[in-house]
Image 1 (cartoon, rainbow, N blue to C red):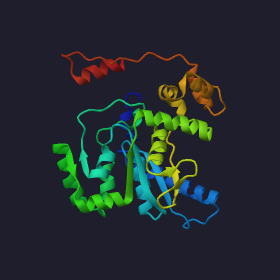
Image 2 (cartoon, one colour):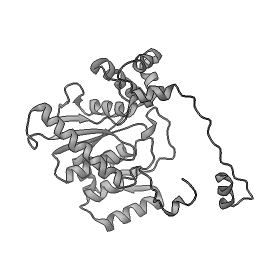
Image 3 (tube, rainbow, N blue to C red):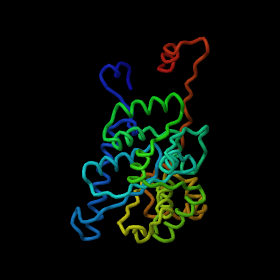
Image 4 (tube, rainbow, N blue to C red):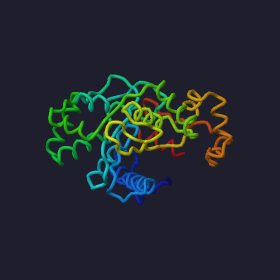
Length: 283
């Protein structure tokens, strides 16, 4: 921004720690539900839709849960995690414990140690008990651990299901989608795809084998952004074939031909104040 703009323009982040993000993302689930009703030729309300999403900070999961709380006929909210699996662990055991390290994966956008939207999930799960949530999160902040009481774990498991997906399983799902559906999906969507399979759904028929409810797997990004993961799963030939296909976004192809600019390094010496360094950076 230009000098002085901060006096006139309010800036904020748009990750899902900002409640505006999950509020906006609720529309994805209403839209998806209505499209499924159209495909099945049923009236809204005549079908219950299970949702499968990749889980990082839990923004999409929170959005789906809020939409369900508003009356959207959603059934089980299923999440797929990678090796950074705190969400899977809390759903399975009630233990919301921060890991000592972040593990590197090919689905890097959902690498997370503590998903900040879990606080919102708990808020809605407990019927808006803000005092309880404040205490639980204070304990989590001070100890790095939160253990759900049996009744809250039971309620969590009634609403949510989860599966932990390895890089190998993610790559298999990406290949599976390419060969079976003719569509190249991104690694995070592939995590959800593999989770749907592991949780007993048929990713081709989109049916749950346990209760025959309809299932929607939410795609979260374009595969064009993740050359390393797609190449690992499909090989160099598979990536090039995708890159040369009509399904590869035109704008992505345009960016691929541009020369990458070197990063700007902002340095600060030990004897400088932050304000002094920032003034030098402006120059």
